[in-house]
Amino acid sequence: MTVFEGALLGEGLRFAIVVSRFNQPVTSGLLEGALDTLRRHGTRDQDIDIAWVPGAFELPLVAARMARSRRYDAVLCLGAVLRGATAHFDFVAGAAAQGIARAALDTGVPVIFGVITCETLEQAVERTGVRQGNRGAEAALAALEMANLMRVLPGEWTGGRGGTGRVGAGTAGGGS
Image (tube, rainbow, N blue to C red):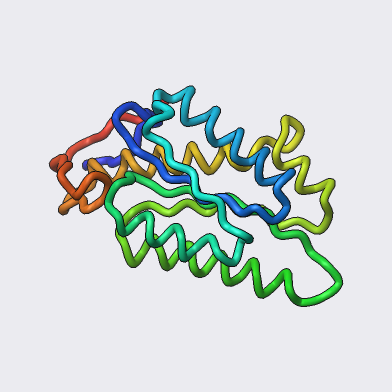
């Protein structure tokens, strides 16, 4: 039996982070959590690029473009969609989720869904802090794991840096 796992190591990896400006007090907290996690796991600041977009609806387009550039081992999408009095919440949250998934599937590069959906601003703030954990930090852990997993899976890796990396089949190290 062969088991494939992605390590939680950021050394030598490049990440793009696409962040929604809408609800910026919340998304800034998600971004800080993601950056802190990537740094703690060995990613250098010069290996992280950040793109701000107007809202969660715009995340997939920019994420797909960054993934297609082949400069990144993973792309993180961070946003916050709060329920209001209209159906707008459902449309925006659904479009963001579907678009982010499509960007990953279309490009073969891990595109991580770090968009929180909440009923209230208080719930959103809780998801950027200690009480509920920081969803940006969780997205960064997923990006680290997926970037490393893609490098050890069988088949050709066409991700970051022009698809130059290829690791043969075998057992990869677990997370740290």
